Length: 187
Ligand SMILES: [Zn+2]
Ligand SMILES: [Zn+2]
Ligand SMILES: [Zn+2]
Figure: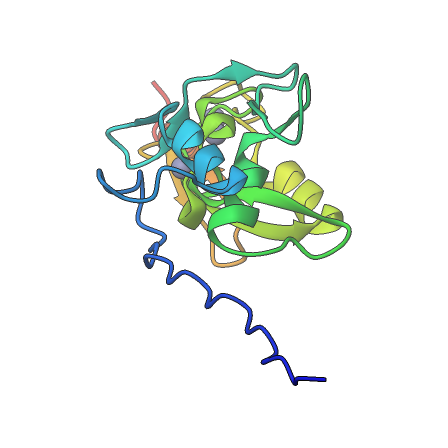
């Protein structure tokens, strides 16, 4: 009986380091992971807007959010949510991904606005459903009771976060002055 040398397993092939660089570098590894390829597909549909938003140029679902084909044939996910999960991190259970750019923009009339198409990771924030609907209810009225639009120029921000319509305020002041004039100096 002769002792055979035990075969040693082949040494693992050294892998070229693959950084998470956007788009990937030419001459890099041909075989990318599904996520890496998805990132490339994703970025190919992004249009950078003047205000810095990354607007989704792909399919749009019924509520006006971007839809991204991911997870298998015929499947799609919310593009902005996917963006947050992929580029930032997991969304805690039960939370929605809210658009900060939408909340900041006083000129936005709301509804199915262009902000819903924004997939820029740092314009997104996970919030609870409660916070999201509260923001929607408080901050999203597009017009005052008199029907003036809440543009940035026409909005007076109060300390408590409420808004006043500048046009109305001017009208009230004018009416008040008018009353003063008519009561003190009748014609
Ligand atoms: Zn944005
Ligand atoms: Zn908006
Ligand atoms: Zn008004």
